[in-house]
Amino acid sequence: MSLDLLSAFAEFGFMRRALAGCLALSLAGAPIGTFLLLRRMSLVGDALAHAILPGAALGYLAAGLSLGAMTLGGLIAGFVVALLAGLVARATSLREDASLAAFYLLSLALGVVIISTRGSNVDLLRVLFGSVLALDDPTLTLLAGVASLTLLVFALIYRPLALETADPGFLASVSRSGGPAHLVFMALLVLNLVAGFHALGTLLSVGLMILPAATARLWTRSVGAMMALAAALGFASSLAGLALSYAQGWPTGPAIILCAGVVYALSLAFGRAGGLAARA
Amino acid sequence: MGDAMSAVTLRDLTLGYDGAPVIEGLSGRIEQGALLAVVGPNGAGKSSLMKAIMGQLSPRAGAVALGLPRREVAFLPQAAEIDASFPVDVYDFVAMGLWRRIGLWRGVDAAGRAAVAAALADVGLEGFEARPIRALSGGQRQRMLFARLALQEARLILLDEPFAAVDERTVGDLLALIEGWRAQGRAVVAVLHDLALVRARFPDTLLLARRAIAWGPTDVVLTPRNLARAAGMVEAAHAPPRGARA
Image (cartoon, rainbow over the protein chains, first blue to last red):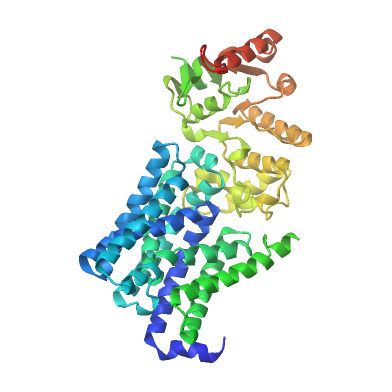
């Protein structure tokens, strides 16, 4: 990347703020995305991200584009849907992914209708795709706080969560921590989706979790390395995406996700641990 | 009661999931230091019995009484429950057998590392420490699981079909390990299919088919008559009720 592209970061505060926000999202998104992938829950993450929308929309309806109201609404909706999906899966013959798909389709439709009743198409776009170039101080503080909390809590639940993923039968035989670890993980997921929502919107917030983790999976053979590489990839994609969007006038969130996607596609072909070239 | 000496006491145990019970009215004892095979047709309730002893399946009626603390019981479920694609190496996987010492947050100290190395050597997996578990063959994977079991230092060890899809040489090595555990006074209960192996190596057998068809010395239990009865009981239980569609 030429110095020209990077000069935008030196010149404009909003570019640096965007980069700082993306750093927070990349750091916290890496362990979450890694375990979503390893637990075969990538689509669950996607579904939950959509489920946040009606909650955030109700917050918007009550208080306009307010950080507090939309965060609170998003958190409540996320937790409710995560719980409901689990309950429906347990109480009916539908599997959890089917009930999640049903919930998220309804949530998305409901959220769009709620926002459209009061706001403009600009507001709707902002909710769907985020506003990473307009992160104010309170929002940045929220992103940084969520990231710090996530890394701290993840350190506490790491061992039971990893064991529950690799060998749930063994964990159940030595400890009862598997269930609580899963619940805490789901809570962190919702928390990070809501944080990501402010920067990347409801449709893309899961992107900085899944794409870097999936890419890292193709290069690494241990969970620790996978998480570290995913964080680095997330940040690098953010940097490239921000610079590209500044230079070309592309929408920023999608540009970031596209950059992560390009690295993912290349890794699919050339990744050392399971890429096409390594298998041939 | 006299139960204090037994590792496990089953009192009129009935187990079941949603529909019909899988085990009905099972009573008996597993003594400390016992080497017991559990055999029976598919659907006889063997795995359910293991889960009930582990406390992972609550009895519908009756009770399972443990004569030792729960943490002294180790359980090797069927291999299918392990995600072999999980990116972890053999060393880290086996080290989790130290759970009683390290729990949720503590690290593995020098004594722990020595114990892991010894356990790996005992199962013939020296030099495999850095291999990812996905790269192991079926037999090697089972050796790895036995190394982890050994580290748990349990006084009662439950094995659910430990030799399914395992090569003959590995079976021999693992049987030697099991007999070593028994010599140390630990009790081992194994769900098995290979009756010849049970006759050759297991002094006691429980023949299970929803009820205990027979429980005692292996040569008394595994008679053709008992085996035929066991097969008949499970078939009867799985046959559609009269009047149901064929």
